Image (cartoon, rainbow, N blue to C red; front, side, top):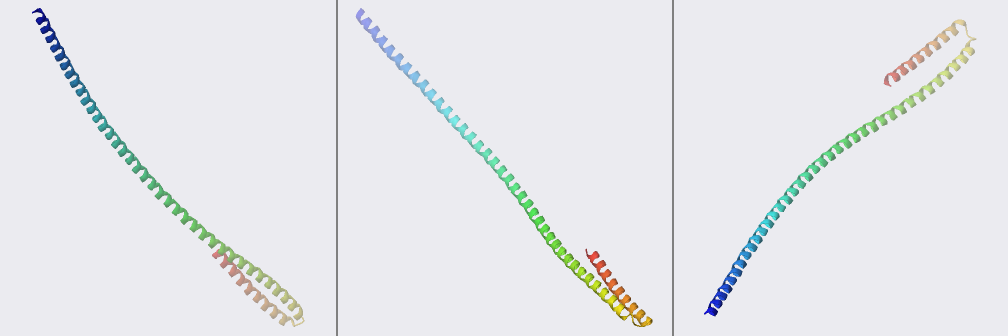
Length: 172
């Protein structure tokens, strides 16, 4: 009987040991599953948070990009307006330069014409003096009438010349 008791005790001990291992195994398995579920939950949260951060970063990058594009477009418009103003100003200056060059040519032509007229007047005056000397053999009355006619003619020419000079000065 003692043997049966020892054997019964051993059997109970074996059964207790087996049950202990089974319970321990089951508890470890539950802890492992709980840890795995927690790990998956944390992984899912982390992945969700990572997606949220990525979306927020993409949204921020898109906002920055749109702002930079708007600023660049505004700068391009400003540069285009400035370039148009410069081109307009350049055109105005070129037009003004053309007018000034044309005006200079006209003044040069007038100056040349006036020089030519001065020379012609000088030559005419010289011929008249020679003519007066030639005709001085006329009577005193005839010489005086001839002299007065020439002086009158010269006065008209001088007046005409002065009128032209005044006209040119007023046009300038």
